[in-house]
Length: 232
Image (cartoon, rainbow, N blue to C red; front, side, top):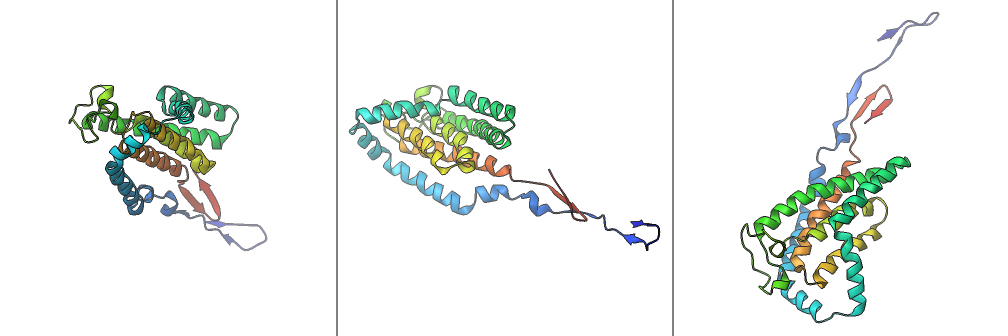
């Protein structure tokens, strides 16, 4: 475009709008679910199956009042009836006080929770795994037998809830927050409600869901025209 300016020569301005797709980061899923992460997760899950019976025996034979109280407290951090409303409340508070960081993190936690819940509930129903409290062994699966609470052990619902909700906060604020979902996972095993492999899969589903939605917040579409940058 030529802009005539009185008393001076015409100045040519470049107003071409350039789309830079690399800033959109379409390969986000590959970053989160990359080969290294999946191999590590697969290794942990496979090992957990081998340690199911042993870890269950160890925890049942080493009960004490400290861990009784500890697990009673942290077990509640995996309860959907508490955590879901708390996540909504956090988002509302962040929105009300105009804390975009807090509201965005809470929103990502909510998205992770809903997404992971759908997958976890589906696996529970299909796997039909008996809880360790039924004394049927760690390999008692009944295809599509997850019709009641006692045969919906795999994966752990408490583990997925806590990891899905707290992962975005841990990634955004402090890695120490991971102590909460880790304690929830331990509590479910200590209380004889889940096998090691139950909490391993539940934690993995929740963690990857939380990490994915946390990283999505950094995606931007960028238009660059003559030095003017527009992001949304």
